[in-house]
Amino acid sequence: MKYKNVIGKDFDTKPEAYKYFRKKINEFDTRSHIVMTEETPVRQSDMKQLEKDYGTISDRATAKKSSYNNYQWCVKYLEEPYPSLALGIIENGKIETFNAKNLFKCFGPGTFNPNKNLEEALRYEIRPQIEEYRKMYKNSHICAHCDYSFFPEELEVDHLYKFEKIKKEFLELYGEEFIKSCVYKEGAVHRLQEISPDEEAYPDSPREAWFDFHKERATYQMLCKNGKNGHPGCHPLKTYARKIKSKY
Image (cartoon, rainbow, N blue to C red; front, side, top):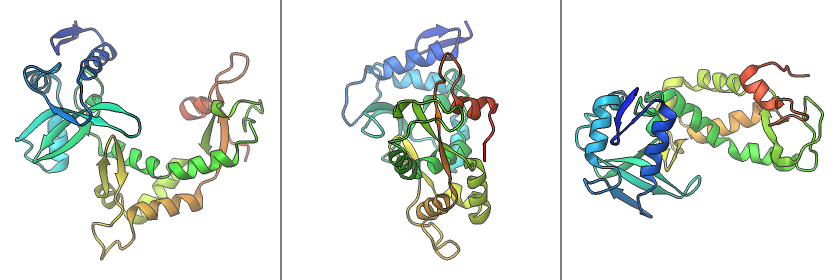
């Protein structure tokens, strides 16, 4: 067994270990939050053992510039983006939720990653623009690349002018480190602050600045998630395999 003593069990793979961990988290019964004890489905001692054997929590502590000594593990109920139970830490009276895959190497990469949090925040703030385009496109169900017709839910909104390029231009304009400092956790998602933490150097709202910057540059197309007749979808091909090119 590669991953031993994960909440009292041994596992060969990370997916198996994480599936069991999530099963135990879902056994908590709360509509607010519960602090783990030695009687809860996952115990404080279980979490301390995970930290010792597989944790990368020190990476998170360094990034937050916190001693991170006085804390308790808990489970928190979240309404958004959908009702769920999340792993949390209570520190100085405040609860911060986490994806366990980012903290423990027996579940995932086990890396507290500010770059990933920034990416999540930038994509979250432009969701209204994506949904607006989807509504505009609702009466036309043709994939932009394979030209087959699909139901609306079988199509994905795709950046024709690459999201990564828009993101890079924005970070070069405002400063990547400054924008990273504007990322915060709201429920289960990361967001950009509405009010600038440095109004003298950066008077604009980081959230509004990104929203407007992206809206001015973004161009979209609709790509199928799964192709016809057993062929792979155009959106996965572009996203992962990069085997299709823009017609423009």
